[in-house]
Image 1 (spheres, each protein chain N blue to C red):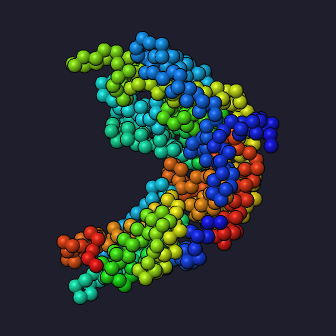
Image 2 (spheres, one colour):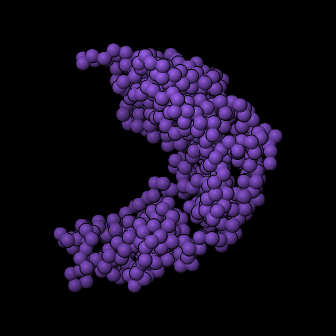
Image 3 (cartoon, chains in turn blue, purple):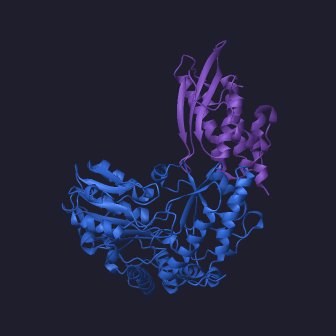
Length: 419
Length: 164
């Protein structure tokens, strides 16, 4: 069961969770990596080792343990920077992608900061109907706080981003364009580089949501043209509790802090305080060194596999899934029908069987998928569905598992008399 | 397979042929409830009548989009409450809530719950409990609103648990 791109058997052996049985003693078939990924033992070992051997508060104190903790944390930052082809000072550690988006949205509305950055009444913020709520709600809030106007690009019935009117949708008043780099529902990869080109011509910034792209395809922030890129560790084999905001150096330099407190200050007096330069300006509190160590191990793991190989493996699974599901009468795939500019999230409807019920039957067979609107409610409305079932693939999934998914869907149809 | 223990025939019947479905006039209150986790939603109307000074459920009409459990539960609920005094219907509602929270341990009283005992298996699947409760919560909310909007509101209103 090897693929040409990855030794999947060897990869699977690294993931203790995949050895589990679930309902009815069935082996786990985990097709929900879009929600969170399983973790390889290398990541678990790195987290454990950080706590066992190097645990101290980083950036503080003068003892050896503190030095080691600092090296772990800053070493992780450097690793992430290399992974993105960015500079370490451009990598801010947050709790997750959601917090990273909120950080930028806050910075654009905070009083007293660089006037060039500030969003004001009458300005525009452009997002898309395809966004995960994390890259949607904070921008709604920014507009409500500032009086700016929220506009959005539509989704086509095929699940692509409608960029036909890009030139008119991005205006001289657009301050920032926030767009997904890979949809968590349809897998669609919008033309972010092209959007960035038009945005920059008109003086707008670009934030790309990389939560579903950074784990699954090679990402070079310079080639992408993004001013900001966000993603989460737990979706890329790493631990929960840590995420990344990439921001171009001169932008981070001009931004006020979001969460304040210790670690991010320069001088504190009762009358007022000054703040450190980025990235520390945006990292309050004691650094999450164990989480950073885990993320670094995840980056090492993915780098060793090669992100081109990861993407190719997933493309092969996705192509198989699209073929297999297309064969089933009564199944409608949401989103693009090919793997061109389309990653490994396959959401679908089954005639006469609600997603919850599909998910319940698949669960009974040991298959874990997600059901509902997947934190992308407007996208579902745009595609004309109430809710969907979503299978999402990653490095440890196999072609046999895709076949099991198709068989499971047919079983659900028979069970509910819809086949 | 444990699927059959949750998806009893009664449930699948109600799913395929939901009772009292559709929005009807007249009504005393209308609510719109949603399960934010999955996007299931229900619009529900309640119409009450006065019988010897006591509010009685005259009609429950609803429109909904959702899974088999949520749809079947709304259908069974409407069968159970229509025609009953509100106080009695609230008691039934409480019994159903307790059954749903019983984590598979509940021993439902068929005299009180009738067809709703078929949902006992749902309580073993925490993710589906909200599905089974969606219609009931909407009915409780609509009824409370209908009562507070009329002269029939008492200080011991049934929405506080009622008197047996």
